[in-house]
Image (tube, rainbow, N blue to C red; front, side, top):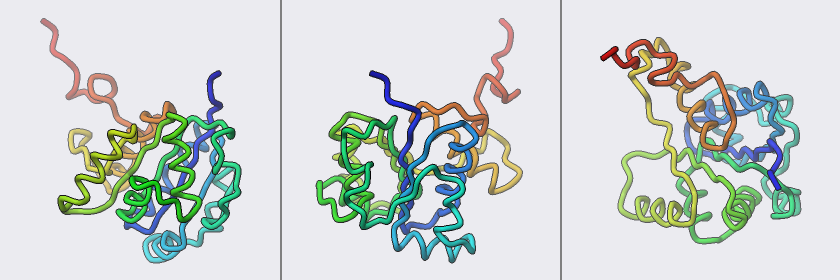
Length: 198
């Protein structure tokens, strides 16, 4: 059975609230059904970085749940989804998922995604990484998670921060099987990526 085009999108308190907002916009444009969870720390980051409240994102999502609502549909493996994106993903949330300690709906939903062998993409926002961070990421990769820090792609010749955000978001949507025009593709719509004729 193919899961529906239904994506869980979680936002945590790491810097980079714009990634979560842009993911929601792109998923809505793609016709995906989105299930949004915003942590308390993410609510603060949204206010600091974008001047928004979590409620301002509700029009972009199909459903929104409180971070402490551990009985929400996305907390069960019987609720079919195509995957989950955590954008941005804090080290705290990453660590909870890696250890199976599910203290809120975000880490519980991520745990469900892993146990059901679905796509879990973590846009981890931290630098530099110490050895504990790296080991945690290794453990998550071994469990099946995809670690996708939002690193800039300069071959797209960005003209703005928005261009860099769009490229990262487009690539993350690729990872959960959602087609989006946001990603500029080497060898396709980037002239410099064209291979010369033999």
